[in-house]
Image 1 (cartoon, rainbow, N blue to C red):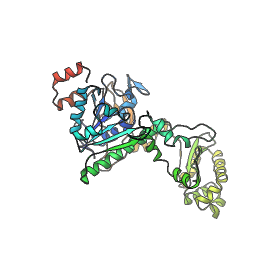
Image 2: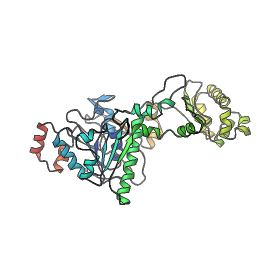
Image 3: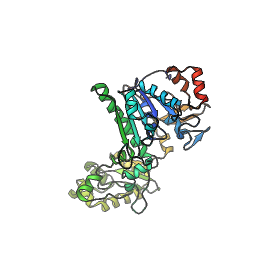
Image 4: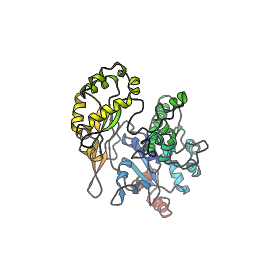
Length: 401
């Protein structure tokens, strides 16, 4: 598919991305994957720091090729008045601006909400930050790790006899990015369908994480209960845990639905527990958590992983091995659903990138191109604004682009 072909459910939506690293760029990436034209603003010479994060190939982060896909890279020094004017020109025709600078940075450059909404009253501005655009903590620097901690996720992650653990990816940033996309789409719908005007979407990382905490707050409010770390088990929902098999591998089993619990107990030779009326519902099983966990653990420890999975699959009990990335790449189901894609790099080698999620039946997303070279589209975008080659050369000489 050519770069010029506008397809997807967000075709016709123009997004200006003024973010770095994870939350803002991931938010814009999701819109780019579904057809939005995303113009990414990067500082000249260095670009988004993510270009140098994690493993590099020929000097460029492999992560960048996913995070930057389908975007147009334009270099602008936002501290320069000429660059700020270029942003305002872009905003005139834009639908969405995404930014994840510390609150006040955009205002310092004359590009805050008040200024940009005057340029384009129909603008939707997604503002992702550690603590939000107001409140006593607004000026604090806040990365995903801080949001995960203040949002309550870190405290309940890990084992009770060890310090709080982190998820192996920057989950707080990604959760915030997803909330940003949801907010942008709701604001666009309100503008386009309900006759509303533009508005800004304020996403704080800690609030996005806090929004994922299920019943933690009402349990505390009602009973004063502070949920603690419980390792791999799901507290208050029995049985749902990770178990070690005879061949020293791990299996996740979720037999917490009433009918599934009965099927599992029969499958592992414990019909007595399947037929025990005291265990017919979850609240009864919670009282006897230790007994149930011991039964399942002993059965898993006496059998190899493949046998455990075979028995549970036949009994229609949700279960699975814990995949590493090699398992994922080899898995037939991943391949069948096109979740492992290979894309050519400039040097001819291929890079594996994840497929597009979610899957839309009529207007699916697509990878039109992988993360671009720094400033690859600067000339194209500025030419469309009326800057000829001489004007662009002068801006480049002054370090504006």
